[in-house]
Image 1 (cartoon, rainbow, N blue to C red):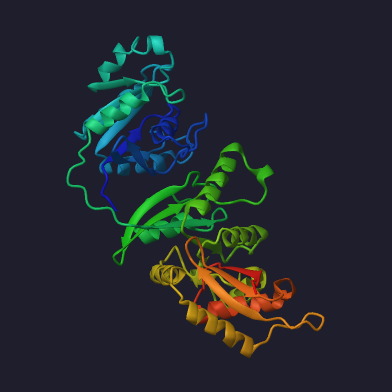
Image 2 (cartoon, rainbow, N blue to C red):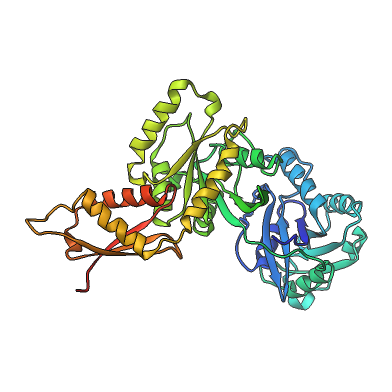
Length: 437
């Protein structure tokens, strides 16, 4: 992974930081809403301009108003981001003018002795873009850019200036990293788990459901393996019960499922396994996402709980017998070391190459072990099998009467494939086709 230059966006609440973040990226990542405190955690995304790449970091609105929900935690996240920054992009609003809070923020960041660019947002009129900005020079920042995040005014020039102020020399070679998404219902310990893995207060943690609104990317190196871990807002069951911001957050969780290569699905043992847990696993199966089911809060377990929870999981997730699971405590860190060993083993098996000769010997062996049931006296044969694993493990079996193969025998074949070729934790596709001869 390249140690990219970092650009941090900062400003008071509701000046359009997240809208600018999305505009610079050219895609909608951060949630934008006309309400203070929507963005809470630091949000990292790779930003590309011409032939350059840098890491763009969105932050929550800085304020000393403790009446804003989670404001103390938001300010702490901003301080961490500023320490990482190679360049600071301070956003103010031309529409609202220069406020006392803007001056306080400018004073704080200038003390850091880092390059700073002032983006004067909501400068929507192209003909008057440079008018009435003189007062903003009093902040002591040399580079001023009147922009409109919504309409894209002057954004290209701003990106040019960002690139000019960053050092792209002596960057390390880029390595592949595995994209892991952490998902689950609200308040099951997703952020606590990630913080424990990182040993860093990277995500704001609270007992109140709905704390994580955006998805948050974290890059980490464990046992010489590189990972991009994405924490998400919890997925809820009843969309009618969601406010507009929570509804957008749920869309982000679905986005993370689609764009992750591997999923850690967390279930809180103290909460009943519900329909939404089953729904998530069904989605993961349909998207062919390798998955580890993490049963959290085992620090509260009794000896009998392990057996009871195992039986409950097998009962509730009969359709997803493929899933691998691990008992963990995000709070104490128990068994967290096992997670990434399990991830690596599953990921290695996900990409295994299986020779045709071995596959067809397997097909012969399972028919000796258990013949396909006849259909109205018709003898069914499995002739040969092919396999590809480009997008997901895909087995295609050719038969004289594929339409008559009973679903129980299909399940038998899938279970045998998992056992023989070690596909635990990996959804596979099993297709039956008519033999050509």
